[in-house]
Image 1 (cartoon, helix red, strand yellow):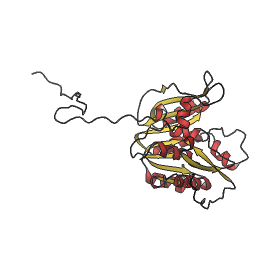
Image 2 (cartoon, one colour):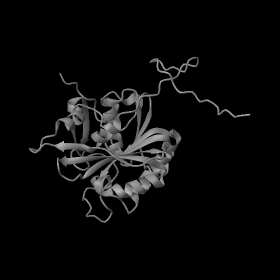
Image 3 (cartoon, helix red, strand yellow):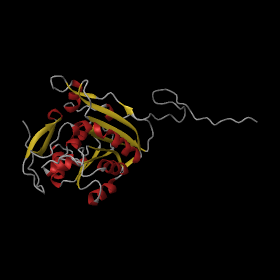
Length: 296
């Protein structure tokens, strides 16, 4: 029998209507506005692409009603989660969603602005983070705005150069070698790569999201690491839909099964060498550093 949810908290400003949905094939209960900014597949794919492990500390910017944080918490059982959301009503709803799904003890949602003010100060007090991620506003500042103010704030850049400001702000909160992961419109790839380089994040990895086999990608996942140098790499990506419009098996494994994308697979930690033999626990010997000999 489905458990009843606790009463919704008092939201300020109030949401006129909300609806209950589900994430990851019903594993997670998810409340979101009935109108305005509603979650699609983007936060689920983003959450599947963060390479966190253990008790890593993770920040999601623009967390909305918390879909991304919920999916991260479901996949990564010990990761500490922080979200920031400028719209107070959505931030309150994200906190409620985390509570309903038992994730409150290891999560925090800040109602505030990533770039400035009290929200930024709270993030700086919590930094550095091991991983940061975001689904930033995509649409150009000059595009026709949505009449819904919440939808407009979630999807449309307030001005030219806003994406670079987001990337710089996220990178400043990240520890060296930590990952910065974004889901973006493919048309923003060049702008995002330039902003990542300017923010000191290198070795970018691009993971295209193909709507159908043989069709151009409209979305992509992009990941780089702070204070790491290296060339860009283009991964094979993910085909989202079959010819009949149904999700492919690979997409279903992520969207319903909670699997990670290749970007979300954290590398295994190195095995320590034995001080006496230089051998790893598996029995393989490691190469020792030997000083150069000088001839007399």
